[in-house]
Length: 138
Image (cartoon, rainbow, N blue to C red; front, side, top):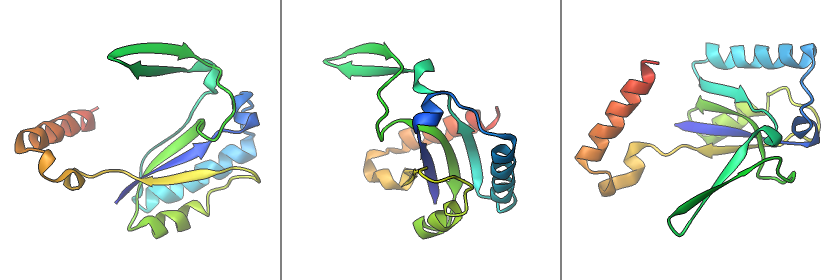
C-alpha cells in the first residue's frame, strides 16, 4: 500500500525558518531508516507559501493567485511518499519521525489502479502503465 505523508505547515515553516544542523541530521537518519526498510519513494520539504501559487478552476476557466496564503491547516510544508503494509504500519513509522512539539502530519492512502474498477478501461490502464514507466526512467 502506498501512502502520502503530509507535513503540515506552521508559523516557522511559513516564515522560511530553516532547520538546524541537528534537525537535518535527525531527519536524514530517519529517512535513511525508511530507505533501508524499502519504504520511501519520495520525500521533500517545501518552500513557504509566499513562494507558491494556487490555481483555481471554475466554469471552465483557471485563475492563479500567488502566495503567501493565510496559515491554515491546509498548508503543506513537506511530504513523503511511502510504501507500508497498512495504515497502522505507516502510523507506527511516522510516530518515529523526529519532529518537535506542535508539528502535525496527515497520512493518506494513495489510490491504486484497482481502486478505479471498471471505469479504468484497458486502454486507460495501458496509458497509466506507460506513463509510470516513462516517469520511472527519469
